[in-house]
Length: 517
Image (cartoon, rainbow, N blue to C red; front, top):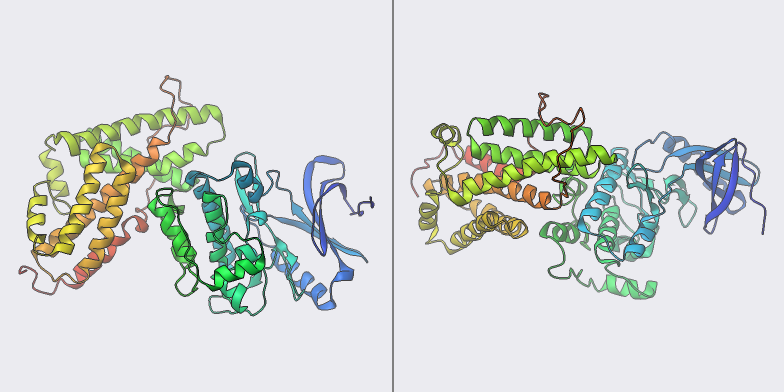
C-alpha cells in the first residue's frame, strides 16, 4: 500500500475514490479532527501544459462560486507532482448509492432533490456555466441538519484534457447560443446530441436532469444498457421513453417527458424547468415561503371571521401549500410537532369550508357574493354554460371534464381532481384561442379562473394528506403563531399561467363587440 500524499495543513485519513488521473481522499484540518474535507489529488505528469494553465484559470473563477447546493471549493495547493483541490466533505454519500439502497424514491423525495438541483442550476446558468457531467454519482448528500443535495463533479478534467473546471467535472462556460463539439460526460446520462453527434448546447444538462429524475422514480435509467453500443443503438432508434402507467402523478410524467426529448429544440427550457409545477420552487421551504404562508393564513382567519368563506377557503389552501413543506423541513422535533398541530387546525378548517361550499351549499353571505361578483359565478352558471356549449362537442367535453374535477374535489379524491382539472383546463386553453368574443367566451373565461383556483386548492389539500400530525394538545413555542402582519407578495404567476394568458386575450378583444355569439 502506497503512502498517502502529504498536503500542508491537512491530515489524510483514507482513499474514498479514484479516477484515471486523480484520487480523492478524506482528510481533516490538522489539529481539528472534526473539520473534515475531501482532497482531490490530480497527477501533473498526466496533464499537458495547456491543461495545467486551464486548471489555474478555472480555479480562480470557480473558487468565487458559493452556493448552498454546490460543493464548495475551499482551497487549492500544488507542488512538483500534484495539484490538490480542497473540497467541502459531504457526509451522506452520493445520490446513486442513496437510490440503490432504497430501490426507488417517492415523488416527495424526488421533488425535494429536483428543487435543490434546480437552485444549483439556476446559479450556474446565471454565470453561463454548464455542468456537462450531471449524474447521480456527482450529486452528493449532506445528512445534517436535514438531507441536502449538493452538485459535485465540477472539479475534474474532460476526456481530452483541454480544460479543467473545478467542481463541475466537465463544466464549461456556455451562453444560450454556444455550441460545443467534444464528447464529455457519462454515456448513460449523456444527451443524445452529445452521444451521437458530438454537438450540443446548454440544454444537454436538462436531458441529464431528466435521466436522474427518471432513475429516482423508477430505480433505473430510461435507456439502461449492458454496453455503450447497446445504449447508442437505443438512442439512435429514438426509442420512446416509457413511463409505466398509473405509477406517477400527471405533473411528474409531464416533467419527465418534457426533459427527455431527443431533439434539444423540443426539450423543455431552463425557464420551463424552473417554473414546472412538479419542481414547484415557489413552495420550496424557505424563509420567504414561510412568511408568505403565515400571511395567507392570517388573511384566511380574517376572511373566515367575516363569513367570507369562499375567499377564506382559498387563502387557507394557499397558506398550507407554503407552510406544509416548511413543517416537513423543520429539523427541531419539538418545534416540528408544534408546527404540525397548528397546521392540523387549518387543514381541518379548510376541509370544513370545502364541505360548506361544495357539498352542503350553505348560503354564502350576500357581502361575499358582492365581493366575488366580478370574478366568479354561483353554481347556477353551470347549466347555462353547459347549454351554451352543447353545440360545440369539444368545448362541452372540456367543460364536463373540469366539472368532474370539481366532483372529485367534493369527494376528497384530490389526486383525481387535479388530473381532471389539468386535462379540462388544458383543453379549454386551446379551444378558447379560437373562441370568438361573446357571452359564452366571457362566461368560460370566468369559469376557467374559478377552476384554476379550485385546482390549486385541490393541490393544497392533497399535500395536507401527507401531513402527519399529533392531535394531543401541547404548548406552542414563541414564534410559531400563525398570524403575521408582514407584507405579502402576489401569488406566484405560475399558479395562474392559463388564466393570465386568457385574460390578456380578453383585454385585447375589449374593443370588439362582445355581446353576440
